Image 1 (cartoon, one colour):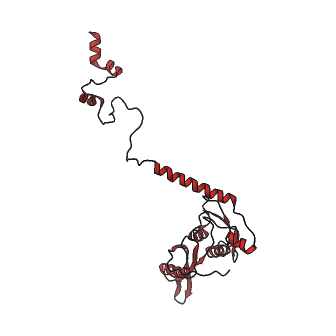
Image 2 (cartoon, one colour):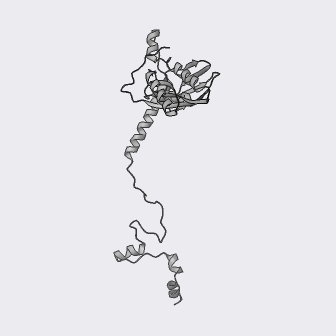
Image 3 (cartoon, one colour):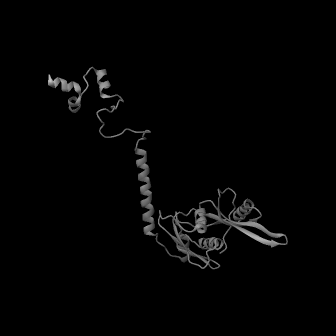
Length: 246
């Protein structure tokens, strides 16, 4: 399907290297090596492009691939953090199936297809390679072919002249996740900020310092009161045993 290309000016595009290949050609003096790179660029908001570059050095090949990808930017239809509907993309003998998923599922995909989905800003989707080819080039192009055939719900309803209801399970899941995030943020604002160490809870021993950092004997000396003595400690002391004998 032919898609309308987008001007990269003003877009914050991120680059993702899918794979780098080392190529060799046999000449009279021996073998001459070069490198080929496939790069995916996207802004995380539905715009993505795939490019391929080849050069004698790795950085140069990546630079050429990025320039090629920026020339082939297209827009893909998304639905929140997933895709609008299930679709199958084909390229050669490679075949990739893309299935929408509920929020929190994550991207279930291989390295090549994951790079494409992350570039367009999809975070919840299920994918599966069901073709005969697992080559990274073919998988990326198959995923792109499937993504370009995605249509929004209102576009399909307008083309068919009917009304398509929203997916109740997906809408409920999105609203529930939004409510949980809002309650977590509200609780985080209500809780006071704690210090570094904090205070240990629980009973303290007879020789430990109190809340003021002083022992019981030192604390009682400042108030003019006699320090409190534990009966067990008094019976064990030598002075107490002498008084009992007298």
